[in-house]
Image 1 (cartoon, protein in one colour):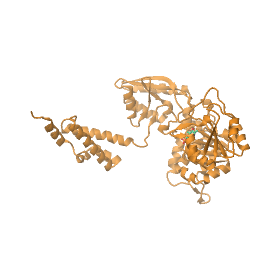
Image 2 (image 1 turned 180 degrees about the vertical axis):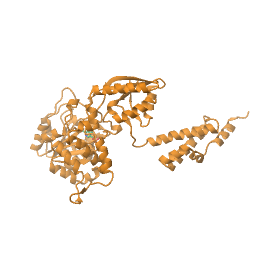
Image 3 (image 1 turned 180 degrees about the horizontal axis):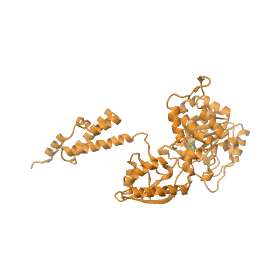
Image 4 (image 1 turned 120 degrees about the vertical axis):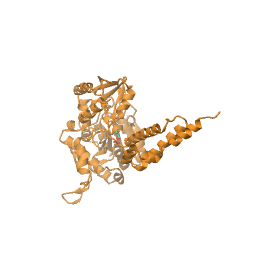
Length: 469
Ligand SMILES: *Cc1c(COP(=O)(O)O)cnc(C)c1O
């Protein structure tokens, strides 16, 4: 008996659209406009190949029209995937306000304007208008940092990891660095204190125990080859209960009595006291400087709320030594970061930081404010939507994130969504597929939207997106 399949397969194969035909479609034209001809050809080829295999496996659509239709929808999906690669704006509805995966700190309006208006073209990066000579790179941001923290001098590098590495390499290569066992931490993203020490050429000298380290433990460890005492703020975890560590002032006294540098990696970079908002464990940079710590480093894009950077402050001569080290050249920041930092630090200088800097706005938003905003939003959304979306409000907790303030979870009020035609997993995916993508959490069988991390301008977009679901 004759097998009809080979005939059917070869007739289907003959109906398969060619790469050239696919490149004539409107969808291909769109892909070419956005991603270039090479990418469009690649996508068309892959599409043909997949369809060919489906025909050979006998799972293909029937008929030329449906083959072309299938090819077009496959190419369209590939085009969408292509446009999502790289850095794209999203709406962060997770309630995690220093969200490392979503770009850490959102910039203030002033910082955005400074990047575009002051730094994106030619600018005074290393030029002094008064003298028409070469100017000092980073001087604006560094002066502001000194003014705000009371430090003698400052220098800015690519991030806090780079700052720690550079400081250790400059002052402790080949020497012992005394550090408490309770501070040998991992920040995430591969920043592990013992590894950074090893890479910089410093020798780890751990003292005390995980939960208790006394001043005498440090004292006993100091010897011939000691170069530095290091204190690291255990940013993303917390030891509670039977704990002990010396006060900064005691370590300062010990270090200076032994002619050693005391370096504090403060991590999150709180420039003002945030204990009112539950962040009483965050070291305030100015307080460390006032206590006499020689060098302090911290991130520019955590609680400071600016561009990615690592800020180093401290004693004048030590900072100049860092600036003159050949590694500084490899780790310094670009004009865009300086512009964002200057604008953000300006808010601290004018004491408008809680009004102007998004992470501090979010931190200082009260539970009542959030509840009121969310309640209004829920009402408007319910009135606008076609009835498929079920909208509730649910008390919950926002998260500081970014390796800062573990255990600090400001009370919030979430929108809690379910949909009559979609599971919560599908609903969450539909939000991610929207333009701009909305990143939300699933909890208690609902999709949760925390408006704490959504700006007022984004709120309008979010309303549009949600009322179309
Ligand atoms: C976050 C953090 C770092 C790393 O900072 P980056 O700016 O992400 O490089 C280093 N040390 C401490 C204590 C931190 O909290």
